[in-house]
Image (cartoon, rainbow, N blue to C red; front, side, top):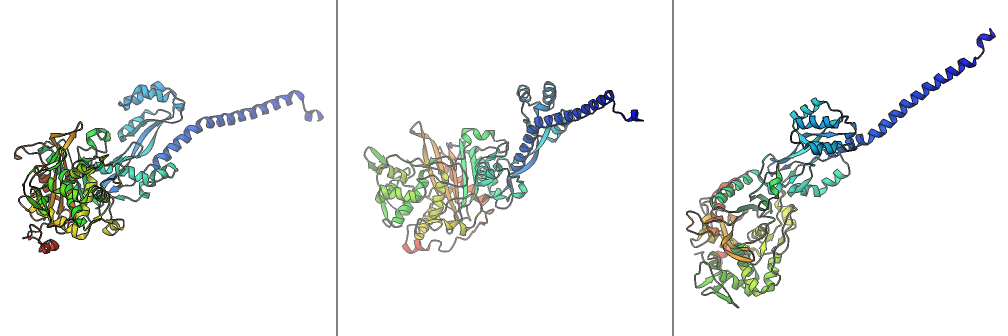
Length: 564
């Protein structure tokens, strides 16, 4: 019996060795698994990190003032690869390029040849392409959900909206403004935000008016063979931009065309000499100063000489003119005399107060600095009085005209919806109310009097007022005699303006029916009239076929020229 329980050395050695081998194998399996996890953890974390970033790149919807979608996110799928897990890279390249033929085989092979844990193969593929890639069954190839920005109305409001890139980051326009308000900071902090978490951004634009404005500008551009055209409509009491178009434009769904030089936002980014539309500012300055009144007279019997220069009138009357006559005959001589009467410093101070000598800042990140004479003397004041020698963004000129007719309040334009109370919180009283009535009066007179240049936009029933402007373009440092930049500013209705319209045309041509003329009254004016006739009812301004009773009481009481 003792022999049975005796520990045999030969047997114990075998048992111990077997047990040690089992434990060693177990530890090898565990160690191997740990090594595998260590090698693949970076790739997994990269995938998780990329997924988190894509989810957080959601953007809020952008809607117009009536709630219509202007920009929104849609869910897309993108293909990624984990090069470390791809066994046969050449086979993977061959299969993927067969399914996705627009891939560059060399570029893809270089990507898959790295030791990275994550690389993009193709962004934003179609459901059919996803199914075909999935059917390939290539290890190390996967899919990630993404948010793609889409603009369902194509070119409509392109220059206002801007666009977002493939990573859903705002590059221009309101899209870039949204990021500047904290969206990118949240994304960078790693917060997973969905579109449902974000309140839509409501713009001041009216999509219906936007479409109509673009259509009429496109027709005018074709008819007058212009190089480019642009327009804007602003609520004079709130500063809201109801529509803004600059042609040629681009489709933000495919914004490659936006890089072309002729597709800039001419209303906000371009700077131009605004021509005779600036005479409205000069008349307002003169009347508001108290040195002139509505019945003041100015000598336009002959040209105004300054050194070797002589300022003349395009439609010379060769007589003494009242202030309203200076306006409707668009007298360069008369407006230059007014500006000289105020003086260089007074003129500069007035234009600065009206926001014409500094960059206009709105929600759009893109804006232009005015081009101001480096040495501003009396000759500059004389020419700037009638719109030559100072280049501004059309939007800031539009802002100033709004102040001329809304009672004298300078309201910074906005592309976001707001009410009148909010607009007036930061508005500046820059003109006396009496001066504002005088400007409404002369702008209406310019449209209703046969001698006025705005008669081409005097659509019956809407009591339109306005002012034309024609400036010779500067080519290689010299004014060109055959290349014009024409503008037209209109107010509707003149007795109590609600909206101000701006139309600009770059190098319009004389065509059949314009009798060889390419000035604003023959192109920008009638185009603006077509716009007013089409969009005024959409804006809640129905036609009135009976003129208002005593629309300008102060002018009537003062016996202003044209009231009798």
